[in-house]
Every structure is written in C-alpha cells, then in structure tokens.
Amino acid sequence: MDEFEKIQKLIRLKKYETPGEQFVDEFVTAFRERQRAEMLKQPALSLLWESFRAWYDQLFSPRWTLAAAVVVIGFICGFAFMPRGGQTHLARRGKAPDHPAMTLSLGKDQTGKTLPAFSIETIRVMGEIEIEPDPGLLSKHFTGGYDQIVIVPHDEADTAIAVPYDFIHLDGKPDIR
Amino acid sequence: MNEQPASHSSNGESDTDLVARAQQGDTRAFDDLVRKYTPKLYGLVYNMTSNREDTADLLQDIFAKAYRSLQRFMGKSSFYTWIYSISVNMTLNFLKKRGRYTKVSLDDVDTGIQNDPTFIEVTTAAKSTLREVNIHELQKRLNEAMMKLSQDHRTVVTLYDVQGLQHAEISQILGVSEGTVRSRLFYAHRQLQTYLEDFVK
Image 1: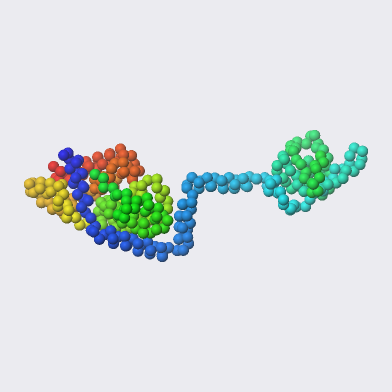
Image 2 (image 1 turned 45 degrees about the vertical axis):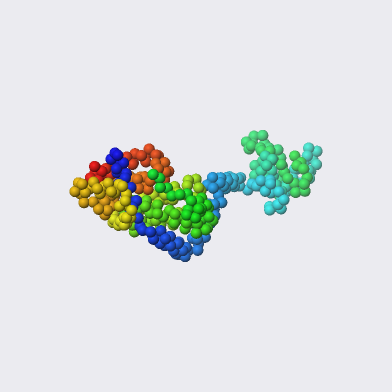
C-alpha cells in the first residue's frame, strides 16, 4: 500500500464523525418551521412577485424570453422610426378622417374653362404611406394656399424630388391627374 | 468507492418524481428530498467548516435556497449534482466571509470506527511505536490537517476521500475539468502526507 492510499484511508475515517441519529429528524422539523416563519414574514407583495417569477420561469424558457424581447424591441423601434404624422394605409382604413378635408382647384384648362374644384382627405405617397394634406408640404410643389390650392406644374428648375403620390377623394372619385 | 445517495428515496420515489412534485408545490416531496440529502450534505459542509453549529445553520440556508430556486431547476443535471453544487458554492462563500477565524466544534465519533481496519492499523502501529493515539486525538489531528488545506483542496478531499464521489461527479459539481480535480487531489494528498506523516509511516 503506497502512502497516498494510506492517506486516503486515514482521511476516510472522518466519515465516522456524525451529528447523531436524531439530527435528520430534528433538522427537517426545524427546516419546516423556518420555511413557515419566512413565509409569514415575507410581505404580500414579495410573495406575489416570487409567485409571478416562478410562474414566468415555468412558462418561458430563456430562449423564448429572448425571442419575445427581440420582438418587443423590434416593435418599439418600428414605432420610433415611423415617419412623423404618417400612418399606414391599413391603420387608416375604416377610420373617420380626423382632420379637415382640403379643397383643391386645378385652375383653368387650355380653352379657358374652369376645372371643377375637389376635396382631398389623404395623400398617399409611394403607393403606401398615407399622410394628411399639409399646405406647407404642398406649397413646395404647387402654388396656392390652404383650402383653395391651385395646382400648377413643377418648375423645372425646382430641385425638389417628386415622389409618386395619389389623391384619395372624399367622394370616391378617381385621381384626376 | 462511491457513496452517492440512491436515486430513489426510502419510499421508492425517484429524485425526478420528488422534484416534479415539489415544483408543483408539494412541500412533503421537498421534505423527502431534505431528509434524503441531509446526511450527505451535512458531511460535506461539516468537513469543510469543522464546526457543527455553522454546518447546521449553513445547511438550513442551503435547503432554503434550493427550495426557492427549485422552479428554475430544469433537470439538465441530476438533482444530486445540482444540490451538491449549491452546497459547495454556499460553503465556499461562507468560508470566505468567515476568514481566518475558525472556531472548531467537532461532532462525536461514531463507535463504528473502532472496528474499522484503518483505525485498528493506526492505533496498533501507534502502540508499537509508543505513540498514544486515541479516537479523539486522531480526530483532532485529522481536522487540523484538513483545515491547513486551501479551500479548493479541502473541497476535493472531502468529496473524493470522505464522501466517495468519483472524479467525473466532482468535476460536474465544481464546474472544472477532471484533470483539475485529479491535480488538486494530488497536491492535497501530498500536503496531507506531510501533516500526518507520523500516521502513515
């Protein structure tokens, strides 16, 4: 027997140091009492929070929690970067207009006949983003004023970038451009 | 020698079943787990602290923590490994806080030691070399030698030599490689050999 083995056998004698036969029963009883006392001492809010955490931990694995967090952050970012004053077509569908309609006049045609005026509720840009008619915005591209805007062609020297847009008429008439 | 507790409790229920029931709020199932693991974990904590009052207090904290964390136990390791890991970590934290101040408070030695071949061998050799060795002296010397070891070395000696766990189990509990476990054991034994020289020669 080598000396390491002797050391092992010697140290193994420590297993004979025991707390006594009654220890386990007394310990379990003390543990139960302590648990009950802790439950009573814990404020109700803390117990509720602990129950919620236990339920939450059981419900979601860490992987799903991460996935859910990514989705929520995605939504928040989506809203944060959405163009101000703009709403998606879907969001607007079926809702009553919450701003006054704008009346536009096309002026006169080549024969001098006055073209009929019309009202617009919404301007759809690039086929998707709907914006409210904004005189400030329109005045960059058209001459005229709010409620009686006269549409004239762009000045060719204008450096504004023209984006495709549609007028959505209150009376459902098609875009007359 | 592996003295790992049986995976079934005295009433035949496996740890997995008891844990599942305890996770659903059955406190009696957790009591069964406490009853089953108390002797082993007591041995672990006691041999690391050398103080029976500290051991009883710490063991209460260990089971209370295990109870609070039970919902987060996913069953990726065995309950046995999980509760041992909690115990080792909490005991090491306790020892760090306690610092150098150690009040030794030892348990009684079971009379079964008198029939242990190693004890007979040690005491017989002692008589022949005129060394007075009784149970209490041996206990005192063994404890002193253990307390001279670093906490990491004492942990592996307790788990391997006293508790009879295998290298792989200790590696899982401590979260270190088996090579590290073997290396720590080697150095710990070499130190113990120096401290207990008169018993092993």
